[in-house]
Amino acid sequence: MAQYLIVGLGNPGEEYAETRHNAGFRTVDILADEMRARYWKNECGALTAKGVYRDHDIVLAKPQSFMNVSGGPVKKLCDAYGIEPDHLIIIHDELDIDPGTVRVKFGGGHAGHNGLRSICDKLGTRDWYRVRCGIGRPPGRMDVADFVLSVPKKEAADDFAYAVDRAAQATLCLISEGLEKAQQQFN
Image (cartoon, rainbow, N blue to C red; front, side):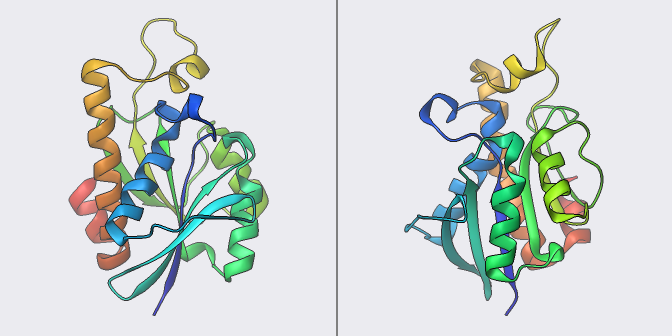
């Protein structure tokens, strides 16, 4: 039975709970409900819960450091659970993907995403799975940081809710069916 570490990226604290940057946290919460993982504990700088999905042991995690330094808790969790990068799934917001859409891939760069940069630096590799929740680009001349740390309204809120739900489905498909099937179904 393979074990996976699924990490949702976000920022801790109520003021960030509904923001675009917390797409990873929101998706992990959906996965926790799906797996009936109700007991959360603080370990390795993250909130973690354990579940099972189709004979796979799953560790769900929400780093409690801020997004830009999430690599530390991810590295500690990988070490604590003996997780190799090919059993690590990172779920995060993505500016370069249209709102409401999801993309699944293995490896790649960080595209300026500081949370991904931190993970790449701490793990010493870029080779792990990514489930990317599209949030689109900020309107007009709005600052990127202001955009990702804002709460989506109206239609954007619907797109965001749809994206995090699809990201949860894509993550489960990735675990049970593999990368190729997940990409065919969700990319």
